[in-house]
Image (cartoon, rainbow, N blue to C red; front, side):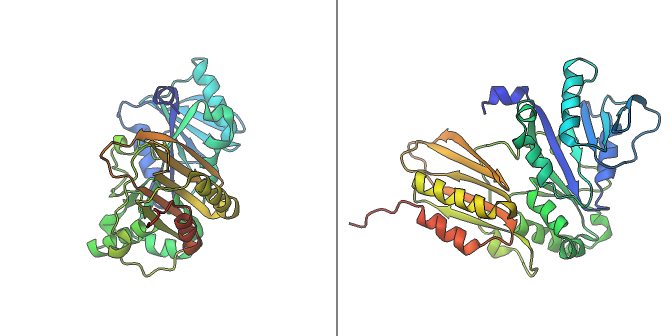
Amino acid sequence: MAKKQQSRLVPVTILTGFLGSGKTTLLNRILKEQHGHKIAVIENEFGEAGVDNEILIDDREEQIVEMNNGCICCTVRGDLQRILGELKDKRERGKLWFERIIIETTGMADPGPVAQTFFLDEEIRDYYLLDSVITVVDAKHGQKTLDDFREAQEQVGFADRILLSKTDLVSEDEADKLRSRLVHMNPRAPVKKVNFGDAPVDEILDIRGFNLNEVLEIDPEFLENAEHTHDEQVSSFVFRSSAPFNGPALEEFLSGVVRVYGENLLRYKGVLHVLGIAQRVIFQGVQMMASGEMGRTWGRDEKRSSTMVFIGRNLPQDMIMKGLEGSLVRQDPS
């Protein structure tokens, strides 16, 4: 998608995190602080929105409240796709104005279906741009929550950025161990400590984590350096190679992986060196939804290579790594 076209779309941030992680505290600050952004916040459960605000709409399905700072809070009891369509209609008719949307998922929710809304519906896809998934993790209870609940692991796996809350309630060593675990589960998501929802708004907006960008920054040493003693359902691995891919072979292999394991593939993304193509090939997906496009042209003296990261639930890592190796073009030793 061209940058000019993307600039016309309304960016959307998905805010997720387990029960009690601090999502509502963060949202309340966004809804009340004078930060200068016109944000529509969609909650699919009742939060502690202000009580002195003008009610714009009040019906059986949802309630839309205009806040004093120009933000909008929507409480959704019905279908997310429908409320996004209604907000679009009201914005185009001048009844409401907002620059971006933040969607809060329930504490027990898998954010996958919310993210897929922006891939499946053409009208939604042509009006909104899924910017990123932000996951809040409670430093006090995070280790046990990740041990006990698959949903908490999936929230981490989907994240483009992780906010570590309540670090004042644990020792620095405990916080570092949890951070190490989070990095091992999802190496592509930076982890930032926050207290009482004090994350600067500009640090959680316009991340473009779902945008097909040309940079995939993964610490090459993260697997070796991070302590890892947990048997996670959700885990990650990285594939790297300087050899070029055979395009048709790679496409056939990845299509098969997505077809068979798509439900367990939370996020996957790669910057690829493909034989015969002068540009980087940018590939990414969410569960069964995969897409790709051409990135920046490789420089004449630039070392070409491929990096792919897979984050998912009980993935057959050895099989996927061998399949990717088998899709490479090997130089004839003669």
